[in-house]
Length: 506
Image (tube, rainbow, N blue to C red):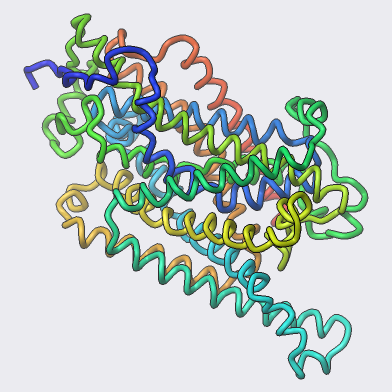
C-alpha cells in the first residue's frame, strides 16, 4: 500500500456547485425511501396523528432528520474511502470484529420481523380491498354465531385470508428478487415514490390542516393518551407512551437493517474511491491499517482533496432527496391522521390497519378515490416488500464479509440463495405464528431502528477520525449533528427497550 490514493477525475456536472443535472444521481435513495414508506409512514405516522394529533410531529420529523444525518455520514465515508464503514468498524477497540458482529446479529435478527409484519399489513388490507370481510360475515357458519364468538370467528377467518395474501406477496417478491437486476429495481422504486409523493401532497393540502398547531407539534413532548383511547382501544392504552414513541422513531426512515444494505448499494455507483481499490477483502492490507493506527493513505494534495469533496455531491443528492421524500411522506401522514382520523377517534388497529387512511383521499376528493387509494397503498406496501429483499441481501453481505473469509469466498449466487431462503422462511414462520403486524415489528423497530442507530452514529465518528485525513473529516456542524443524533437515538432507544421489557413482566 505504498501508493497514495487519488480520486478519479470529476464528471463535468460535478466540477462546480449544485445544479439540477445532479438529480440524476438519485436512485438508491428511492429504494431506501420506498422500503420505509410501507409501514413507517402509511401506518405508524397515520397512527401517531390519529392517537396524539399533531403532538408527536416532532418525533417523526426529528427521527427522519437524525437518521438522514446518520446515513449521510456513512455515505460520505464510503465515497471518500471506497469502503463500507462496516469493513473498518471491525477495528474498533475491543475484541476484533465485535461491532460488525453486533450489527450483524441485530440487523439479521430483525429481517423476519419486518418480512412477516409487512406482508401481514398488506394481507389484511387486501381483505378490505376485495371485501373479504363482508363475504366472511355472510358465511352461514358465521351468521349462526352471536356476540364475542361471532367476532372471534370473523377475526380468525380474516387473519387466515390475510396470511394467505401475505404469503402470496412473499412468494412473488422473492421470485422477482431472484431474477431482477439492480437497475430495474431502482427505476421501479423511483416511479413508485414519485407517484405516492404527489398524491399525498395533494391530499395533505386539500385537508386544510391547522398549520399553527402543526408547528406547535414540533416542540418535543410525550403527551398522555386521551380518555377515548382507553374506552375504544384498550390494547393501545396499555402500551406505555414511550414505547409508542420508540416504535414510531424506529419505523420512520428505517433502521440499521435498511441502512447497511442501502450504503452497500453504492457499490453499483463507483463514486469517489468506490470500486477504485480493495481493502476489506485483502487480509494483509487491513491488518496493516489496524496495526499502524494511521489514516488511509489518501493523497492530501489540495487538488485531490478538492476532487474528493466534489465527489460527495452524488451522495448528498441521493441521501438528501431520499430522506426529503421520507420527511414529506411522514409530515403528510401525521397531518392527515391528525386532521381526519383524530376527530373521528379512528385509529389504525386490528383488522383496520390501513382502511381508515382511505379517508385521506375520499374525504377531500370523493368516494371514487377510494380505488385510487387501494392501488396506491398496494404499490406502497408491495414496493416495500419487493425492495426489502434486495436491501436485506446487501445488508447481510456487508455485515458478514468483513468477518469471514469463508463468506467472502462464497459464490454470489449461493449467498443470495442462502439469505433469501432465511428471509422467506423466517418471515413466513412469523407470519403464520403471530397475528398483530404492529406488535411483530415493534421489537425490531425499537432495537434496530432506534438504539442501534444511535450506536451507529458514534461508530461513524470513530471511523471518520481514525481513517480519514484531517482535511476530509466531518466539519464541526456535521460532527455536532451526528453527536446529537447519536445521543438522542441511543437514550430514546434504551428508554423504549426498558419500557418494552418491563411491560413483558407486568
